[in-house]
Amino acid sequence: MQVMSNGLSRLRGLRWMLGMTVIWSLLVGSALARAPSEASPLSVSQAVSIALEKNPLKKAALADTRATSAGVLEARSFLMPHITFSETATRGDDPVYVFGSKLRQQRFTTADFTLNRMNTPLPYGNFTTRFGGTWNLFDSFASWHGVRRAQDMNAAATHQLDRTSQEIVFRVVQAYYGALLAGKQVEVADRAEKTAKSIMDRSQGRFDSGVAVESDLLSAKVRLASREQELIRARNNLALALAQLNTAMGVPADSPYQPVEPAADRDLPAPALAEMEQKALVNRPDLKRIDAQQAAQQQSVSIAKSSFGPRLNAFAGWEMDNPTFVAGGGGNNWLGGVELQFDIFQGGAKRAALSRERALADKVAAMKQAASDGVRLEVRQAYYDQDSSRQQVGVARAAIAQAKESLRINQDRYDGGLITITDLLGAEEAAHRSQADYWSALYQFYVNYANLELASGTLTSQSPVVTP
Image 1 (cartoon, rainbow, N blue to C red):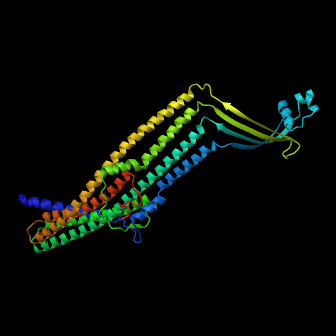
Image 2: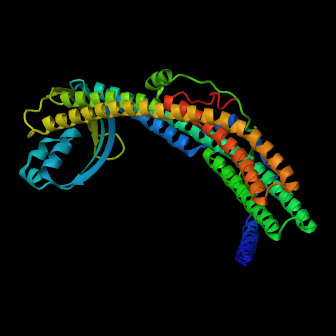
Image 3: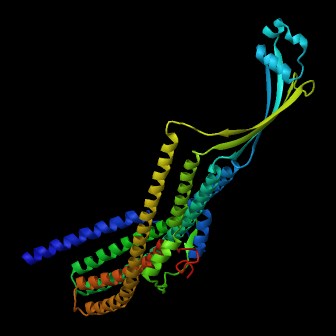
């Protein structure tokens, strides 16, 4: 009686699980997302080319380089003379203003020396046309240091552009192979669903023949419902993976692109760890960017030192003064000179500025060392991840054939009544898992290889993982 009670409880539990899984499948199936039926074929190299053209991060990095290039032109402008033009109209009865305006207009007469005209002149107008110019002849080389600093900052922005391009390539590779993996997962889920359907049909036949209990049939139906749910999730994951690929390329998420390259197992070069570390220290654009920033900061220190030196400026001006806007009836004059400036005391502001720039230079040097150490660690982690995934692909490949053969044997034994439904479902689960593990390992291998090239600073659109 106790055995019968346990059997009935297990039967009721299986029926409840079957009912819930079917309901869940119907609810999720209504929201099923499928790939576009007229999607354009897309290779990984094409995806990378599109991303390097349209990705907004690349556009932002390009804008930074244009801004720093403009900064170089701005810094060079301080080495050139500056010329200005102005046109001024004035009118008033200030005695000094009236006296000076008439002198500049060369219209001053002896009658203007009378006390009444000098003390209380009538309102007088003056139109001044002026050209002026200044030229910094020498500023203790501060301007030259400013030009070099701007050039170093431009170089830093260029290196950052290169690093951004590498990161974009990695994101596209990751998203592209992720979409391929999602497609393979749909295939695996579809085969698993068909296998589960076959097992259910076998169980149905054995149940109808009276050689199997209803609990075996219900177990097979529960497994079939579970595989149907996995297929639904796999298809939705594929739609999401395609959207992530489009986003990585910088195009709308619903763009009709479809990866066409099969996620085939192929060999990739296996570089040595020491070689990859050396390449990283030489090729990493972000390390080059820090070098450029360090050079720029040294120029800032030199500029702060130059502020203690003398400055020599030349200036000149020519102006024309007329009583009316129309030229004529007035006078003109010019003035030029040279000025030598030397700051004697500014309350210690310059020494404080020099100390600040030196402290910033020490900070950049420390950041450079920390960045170099971090790059070495990144290369090692990426190398070991890539090596692990390479070996896991081989293990998973061997497990597929073993799991398939095990499933075939167990199906025959179940048909012969030698094993239970639990044993058969366990074999089916192992076969399903071996397929999923293989494609996941292959995906990780490609992504980890791209990550190793990214860590070493050698990832480009011509990398082996991009151009199969």
